[in-house]
Length: 203
Image 1 (tube, rainbow, N blue to C red):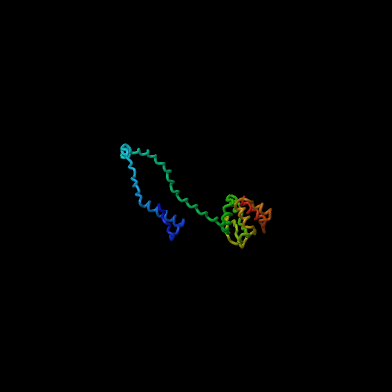
Image 2 (image 1 turned 60 degrees about the horizontal axis):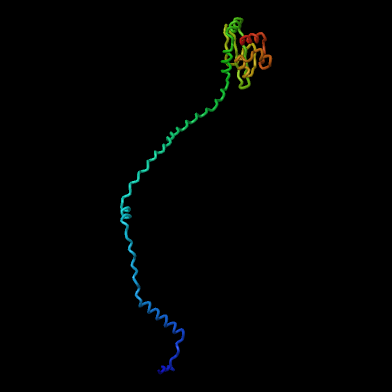
């Protein structure tokens, strides 16, 4: 049998060309092969399960209503505190006048002793007040009566000088005429016998 002649002109295929041809051949085979369709598996429905799903759910018992928490009684609106009464400013001490001293001396005179002294005759004493203020007053025994007035007596039998506070102390009975003379707060000038008569008015 005769051997086929080698084509002298044919060039041997390189490995790269052979590999490329083999890849093309494989791709054609893959394209030509029909792909089997994969059907999704049918899942048979369970009639019992379907019935369970379709059955209406039982109405849940409503939870017992919790008793409403007792509200704390609303606090009564506190009445606005009454405004504290404004404190009155302390009254200023009344200014003592000669009329006040005369009124107190007149009340202090012993009426019974005054009648006895007045029966003995007329007598008058002029008293000078000094200290808180300066003024004159007099005590007169005449016609069976005793007069006390806030004036200067010109025709006096005796004269006296005393601080206002001492005169008030004598009028209030806190100190006697004799004590005032002895401690030097009451000065008497003139007839001592007349001075003793007037002292008796304040017993």
